[in-house]
Length: 336
Image (cartoon, rainbow, N blue to C red):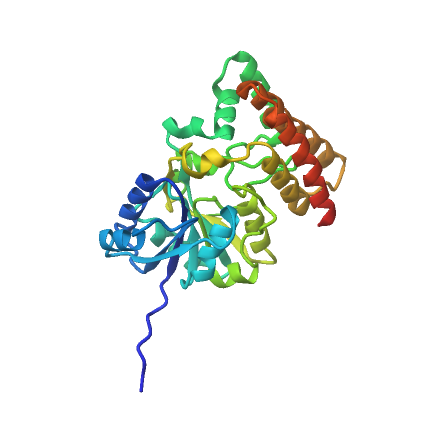
């Protein structure tokens, strides 16, 4: 007797979510409009709210919804829970404050099919102008680019030394430990073809499931909101002749809020720990030039995360966090 089994979907869309129901509703509504229909949607909650399975299943009948409680603490655990239950040929990790374009999944699929060596794909994660100030880095970069004469002059030196004159490249990491921001800006959607990259956008992160599993997913050593864990995963995926690509047509709009898990972000300790772990695992100090670029960039990070944020918040927690994060980060690097 032949048993009919459910077919394996092309994609599993993994969405960790907590506390941003309005954003999640918009995301799910836009997923119903995807021109590629062969996917499942895995919602990973820290705690599953009462009746949420019934409510979302009735509201979004056209979606193949899988609702799970995350196994463990932090964003890394939430994403790995989604990966564990994914059944698609490809898994794409995103956020609940993302608004995907209609062709998002179909364009990611086209990228994978162009070359069997492509195991990861991403696309523009465009941040609307009104939301740029909701993220520290884009706010700071905008000040260096468009501020007064002092800030613009400082920006020229900053971009030359830390970004090697390529701050708006796509998916690049530099010797200093800085990473390029090009995928967040609309100019990049005008590219006519896929390009190979070093990294994937955190909210637009598609990977072949078999490769994700062979790499054991995201590394739980990256703490709190898991800054740099996505880049660490991308670097571990990109081995030998295997490639990651950026498809300019696989567009999502990212509207980062300062609610939900964002308000829980540790803005100093975990950021420093995660940064040091990523840098010394993947970039490393191989010569004096790398050493000085890293050292000066790390000083900038410390001043911003510690001194500036202590002044802004009028308390010493950020400074103590930076000191504690540096000590514990160095210990983690030495253990690795």
